[in-house]
Image 1: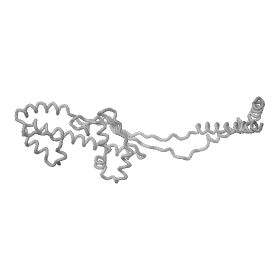
Image 2: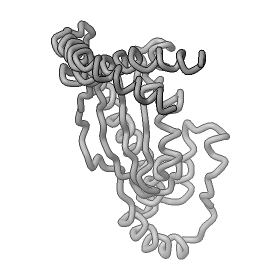
Image 3: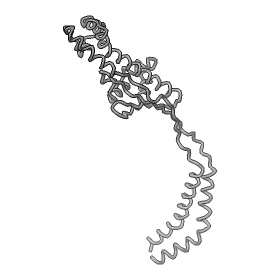
Image 4: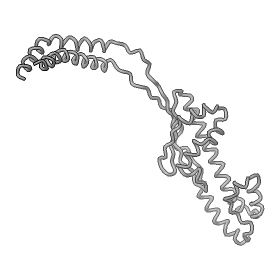
Length: 246
């Protein structure tokens, strides 16, 4: 063992020029070698929405709103000019984070800056428009009662143009008395005052990200390490074979 150590020390002393020259040479080559690859650039548009409050879990619950926005019906109506494969590409680039039970963050990623900005703006505008429409429909019965329309008239107006499936949850009782109707007016005014639509709390903004280039300094360090490895291999490997022979 002592003999091997002595040989190792001798070989290191003899190889000092190599230990200096080869790492420096490879470090210099790495520093001045130009990388031809282009950096990968991607874009992400983001926005935040505070959901509204009214009788509609689909629009007012963060998890259900998330499913609603990424669903086929919503995407197809928002992007009627898109082909099926384009819609799938769009869907794959959409990320919706539920920041709370009533707050969502929408993110759309793509390699096209204009596409992410325009695409997310269309998503946000379409959702807010649907939300306002749902709020108005939920408020309509209450408003009609407050304005003094008969419950039978309200019921007929409500069911007009709706399918049986849409009417399954309708609980309008057209046989309520006028006295009960007056009591409801006060209650419904309070309900309407508590309602509010979804709100865009952070408008659409676009951020850019690009893959970091392998800088000249990093290439120099890598070249130096490779040089040191080569020299130590040159020094140590022959000694290992000699030890096996012994």
